[in-house]
Amino acid sequence: MPSPQIDIHHVAKLSRLALTEEEAAHYQEQLTRILGHIDQLSSHTLDAEPSAHAMPVFDVIRPDETRPGFTQDQALANAPRRAMDQFQIPKVIE
Amino acid sequence: MSLSSSTIATLRRRLAAREISPRDIITDLAGTIETRNGTLGAYLTWDVDKALAEAEKADLSLPLGGIPIGIKDNINVTGQPCTCGSRMLSENYTAPYDAGAITRLRNAGAIPFGRLNMDEFAMGSSTENSALGVTRNPHDLDRIPGGSSGGSAAAVAGNLAVATLGSDTGGSIRQPAALCGCVGIKPTYGRISRFGLVAFASSLDQIGPITRTVEDAALLLNHLCGKDPRDSTSLDVPAPDFTSALGRDIKGLRIGLPKEYFISGIHAGVSASVQAAIKKLEGLGAIPVEISLPHTDVGVSTYYIIAPAEASANLARFDGVRYGHRSAGAGDLMEHYMMSREEGFGPEVKRRILLGTYVLSSGYYDAYYLKAQRARTLIRQDFEKAFEQVDVIVSPTSPTPAHRLGELKDNPLAAYLEDIFTIPVNLAGLPGISIPCGTAEEGGRQLPVGLQIIGKPLDEANILRVADAFEKA
Image 1 (tube, rainbow over the protein chains, first blue to last red):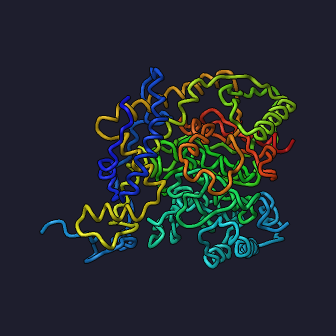
Image 2 (cartoon, rainbow over the protein chains, first blue to last red):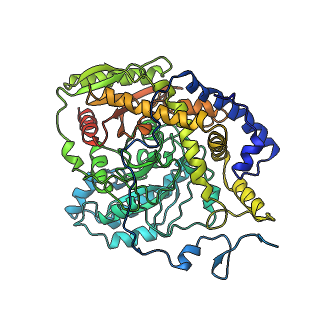
Image 3 (cartoon, rainbow over the protein chains, first blue to last red):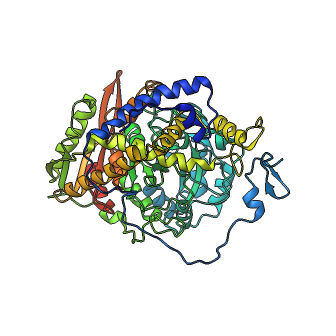
């Protein structure tokens, strides 16, 4: 188990969170404490297969059939900004 | 007795006898909410006109015809808000569809009425992490109702709802039910569709009812469970009539007492109430058996790796493009993502996204996430071994009664550790119920204590049977 030395600015960028400096310092301190506790896992021999979930349900497939879905208007209804019946985002290409 | 403090079972009888109408129930509830919600803060919003319109059309031949059910604000109901207690969704989101659980409730005739406060995105155990308001415990207004389904429990306990839906990822139905003196059940993972439940940790989340009685919980479960093709993890198993488990004795039933759960650190009043409850079960003919769940001590650590990891992926969808808060000040696309999320999410959600991103990030995956998944297997195996010896397992639901508002605000780790008895049940995918079992004194007040009863996978019937026998004795 690596020592819990968290590079908060790197993690915030991966998380897509524009933390303030004050928040960054606060979370750095809190997460270090939380990870310090979580590190107790390393003192155990965990000799078992990993499980992603508890129930024995695997590879659920469904028929490849069309189903009713949203109209364009319904899909766009909650968009914070829309233009020309599309989601509007800041300019990506100059 | 007022209609809003009745049970579903009573209302059904009175509706069938034509003593009351569905309209009377909504009118009575709306009046109570108007009067008392300002103090309790259980509901975020409620639409009386819509509910009255549905009440007019209610089909009383259906099993839940005309019964209003309050809904936690992370379960989508067409045309209603679904804020998840977050600024991210409080400004301009209207649910465009019904969750699978809501479809089932409607098919049984029930009326989804009111949106209940919660910890933001269900992250917390006190409802203090809601960005949209404070919810108070009806038993002591200076105390938390528990969480994350705190609004759902406070509404039932405060007679502002007949019954409600909550969701439970690490105890979020059972713990607030315990702290507010209600019945709350988290069914086996996969029993109830998660379609339309805003995802927190997908491998752990499960919807369930909070009610006044075990009978009401069984009635609601009857109409909530079943396969939904829109949730590939929902189980394709028939749901039995859960009410047939009620009114039966528990003679000879073996109840497991995990030695790791009955340790120092539990509030003396909680401990005394739970011990008295075990004696009462013994008096009803149950046989207590000491069992061991050796990996109990790694449960909280395992959960606080797996749940934030899944949350960090699930909450990536809040990008300010398709729905949710969008920052007004962003220049380019990256800034748009980072600012929208920074402004939209509150402190606990950010904390868990950061933690989850960290444990999944390059170089740390094997050390944290993979280890946690191995620990999860061991925790499940602990229960499997225990259930070779016993029929159900009992424990306190929470090690303490309700804290004062603000008491654990600056100590997230201490708050996380309080989930010790509920978390393993989610990690193992088992059904668990919390029922009232007396009180504990704290600060001169008598506060509710919850008894947790844990069952084998899909064996909700036996935990309901024990809970019902206990409640009636």
